[in-house]
Image (cartoon, rainbow, N blue to C red; front, top):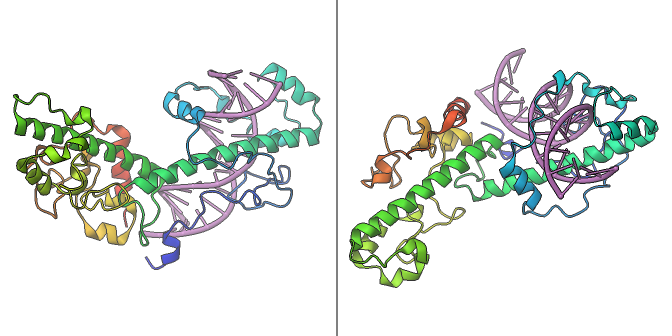
Length: 307
DNA sequence: TAGGCCATCTGGTCCT
DNA sequence: AGGACCAGATGGCCTA
């Protein structure tokens, strides 16, 4: 409410490498967000400069996933006991052997190295998350707090669904306009924009009726405020509940989280200045994608989080 | 003070 | 063998 400064992500995504370090031994428990870091910077890793793009491996991991599934973990019995000589048995044999043979400092060194790698990995993940936030409509602003990770993911999903629906709607519109005789006209396949000059008045009118993102396929000429995510997605409203912003919440409007129960009362979301839109997309909530447990439940939960 | 979110540590598993 | 990925645990910060 009052703390303006704190509204904008009071915490950095991750600390500076210089600050990163771990006494490894002394810390009675966990790392804690930079609580008891002392000396001995571990910049061993930070090899590259953290490229903004996801590496192939990361993408693979993100998409593939499901691979791991350790499943057991046996209750994490050994939790932070590693700092000692570890060797709690049961694990990769060779590595274990080596670990047993390693001296304390060596073990510590190894631990630091692994920790550093993990830190970097999470840092890269956060960078990717920030990148996602940047392209999300309404995800940033002076008085809007940074989206949480879960909110970012949910919002992104719904955003994609909405854009997909917009595309479908546009295709259908064009199909209606040109009827069957112009089967050769397939904007989606041709990239759509290439035909901008060929768009008849009817299409232009339709475009005018649906400015901005709602029909992203339309040429900029026909869509004055045409909008790429960062610029003016005035018609796309995120789930204000996720934004945790008093202003956003007050602004009201239908949440982007249409798929789930997001819409709540009013039926279809209104992208045109509060006026109900006649198009099918706005009348019917995004189909077939039941927002799944996480979607609905998560949003509901997050809603209660709204300010 | 409780709850949410996050960064970090850590051990295990899978992959190259 | 080393690295990537994953999930559990812990503690700190912030907000209601």
